[in-house]
Length: 132
Image 1 (cartoon, rainbow, N blue to C red):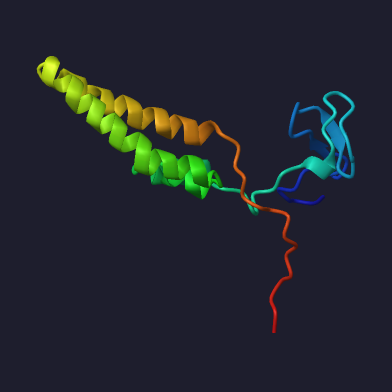
Image 2: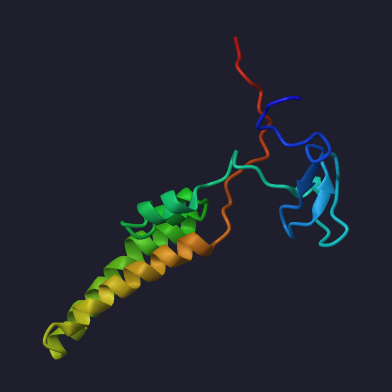
């Protein structure tokens, strides 16, 4: 009798499809249910972190630059944010200051946008390992 935390050997050769969760063999190249293929499986290497991009968006536009959307990030940083602040301050003069509450709405909208967009970070570089 063997005492181990490892799964039984018949289950160790199975895996779940990352897209639909159906059972596949460990060496399966594609899923028959959803069409997932091992070639287009994404790894964490070379991808921008969504949470870090949102954190950078404390200053609107920096998260977009981090995820590879440089032009959008620069426009948000140098055009969009000053315009949003200016319009909120202008509207605040006619609303007893309540229009300043629109600024957090703009800020959260920029954060939500950077969280939801796909990143353009270049992951096509081959890893050469350590070079001596």
